[in-house]
Amino acid sequence: EDQVTQSPEALRLQEGESSSLNCSYTVSGLRGLFWYRQDPGKGPEFLFTLYSAGEEKEKERLKATLTKKESFLHITAPKPEDSATYLCAVHPSNSGYALNFGKGTSLLVTP
Amino acid sequence: DTAVSQTPKYLVTQMGNDKSIKCEQNLGHDTMYWYKQDSKKFLKIMFSYNNKELIINETVPNRFSPKSPDKAHLNLHINSLELGDSAVYFCASNSGGDNEQFFGPGTRLTVL
Image (cartoon, rainbow over all chains, first blue to last red; front, side, top):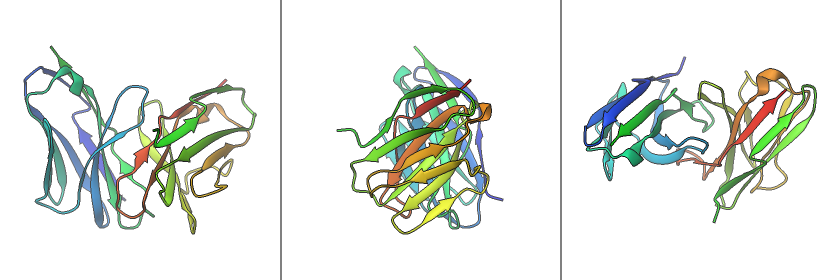
């Protein structure tokens, strides 16, 4: 059965304190791994797609990496506006294009 | 310009009622989706649909039915609402395949 597990469930950082969020997955043929950001009361906002092990993508203070079993979202020198829930999702080869989401990591960055 | 929009944003109703949630996308996408986010914030796929194929998550009760009047719209009809249907429902769309999905703002459904 396809599974996506994110850790930690919640993370509190001081402004400027870098850290990483983890997403481990088991799927029957990965066609893509996605990172989304979700603010309270809003829909998920797309951040990155990774397709193959070794791939990396960056956007401002965020960097996403992918191995055959997990992905990391590295946050460098975070700011309070980075506070949100970060969702990882996989696109298995047999899903009919739907995404399987993890339960998310709730990130709070304090000044 | 709003890419994926949903109405209403909030919906409060009694058990047993029938309700609909509307979704429209102006991105020209071929594929649309409905997801349910429960009280623990877990997002689960309910349906994916393009003009050729409807794929239903087998765990979704048949009281839920998607209706697509045209390529830009995918509405969600729910019959005989139950307490457990209370959740936030998100519509999404993409240009198919492995491309990123764009999500609407969500509809918070509360069944009393």
